[in-house]
Image (cartoon, rainbow, N blue to C red; front, side):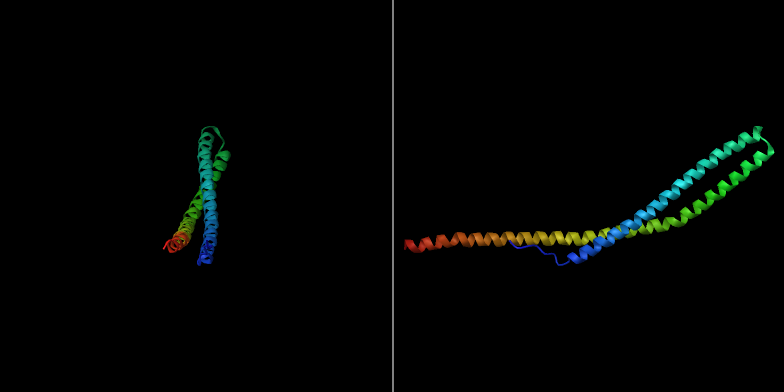
Length: 150
């Protein structure tokens, strides 16, 4: 039985490397997005807690501490707005990385499907060749037995 050789294996390997590169880029973009979302959540929580603290301070605190709480809340609001802008700006990069990974995966799978089909064709041809050889081998003794009987 012969050995299957896929002539487009270098292309398949190159597409696999390209997909892995896109997978790493996507993972990096996803990690950045997830960190940004965590920061947004952290800042939002700090802003809620700071709002309650400001309310309590307004009820029974001094004017100086009220100003400090207010300044801290303003800082948190600016930081939250900045992080939201940054998150909105990085969203297209994440989407682009996801679509590039999808395209690279699709290109690799396309060549893999072709390889599978070629392998199936090869296996069918090998089976036909083996069957022919068996038929020929089985026919030889039969033909030689006929010649002796006459």
